[in-house]
Length: 437
Image 1 (cartoon, helix red, strand yellow):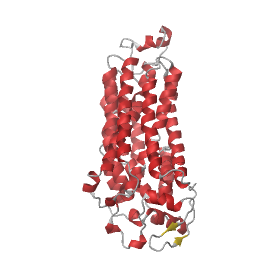
Image 2: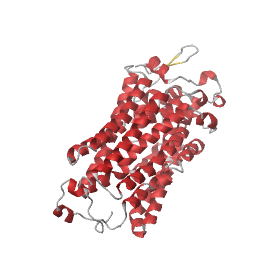
Image 3: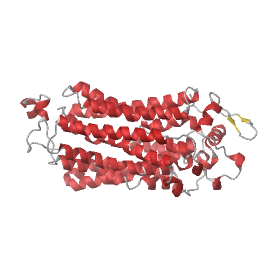
Image 4: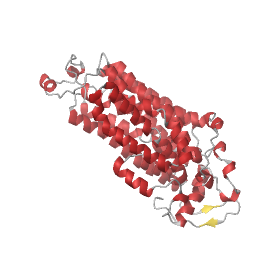
């Protein structure tokens, strides 16, 4: 979109061996925005996004995720269609559209996690949350959403009684209860919540650095044309999607077959999702103008960052199933700050010298922040339901709700699809979910 013909060619053009004909044949955009202005515009989405995260978790408890989630995507679709035209109206008009898009989408993941707290059996959470986070075509998806989705198993008119009973028994009725009293003091004084918040921020910094600024790096440093730039940018999203889906599935297989305990699975995936992206991203800055290898390292870095979803993002639902949406709203709101800081830092560092050396600094910053988040997560991570997350007001009878921590559930269920009451060990036969591996 940006026209650079009025500026002197960046020094990186010579570094990567682009000749005059390459430069002459480059199609320049119509908008004269500096690197600093581009950084502001790329962060506009997150300026809006940061306002509605906690609100989204609260609204899911109050009104149900069915309405909140669907309405958010409907409004976001309209704003997205208006965004190209807004660029011609002016810089700030485009900023406003991006701001509104983020504002409407800020409720999505908190309500998403809140609903999975009521729908995802404990040993299926990794893959279900990972799969559902991968995305779909919005307008087509909306039709199926309003037709097929309901707030909780009790609300679904077409679910079988055996499946409904299986979900309620394995998740617990206190989770499904729609009361929305939130123990805010306990939430904000929880070491685990602070650990998730810091880890989420650090993971988002690295992810958003690539999400917002990778096209600039590919264009102005590595010299890829428009078509190649678009393909490579989509390649990083593809690898992230593949890794998220595969490791989400693998995590639940390892737990169901008792190969690894839940806490060990989470720690391994956190390590893979925080430290490996840092290593590959920093390494890509030292490849120089070997464009193929550089792209491969960046794609691998992006892919491993997808391990964070089954690593720690699913943990919001584990430690507080009833308040999973609220917790994700809190950590996602704080981590969204990285969404507008990261591109702003990139813009400042590359405004005058858009060189490989300056981008190396960008990658080092992202790598260090990745590692800080990984250390904090490993030090604070737990997988059992926290005491304050078990709401005694919503449990009418002790034998009607099963509260079990994840470690115990791993070794009590194993391959079996039977749930046992704590008091008398009475076996309740359940129909296996199609997604149980």
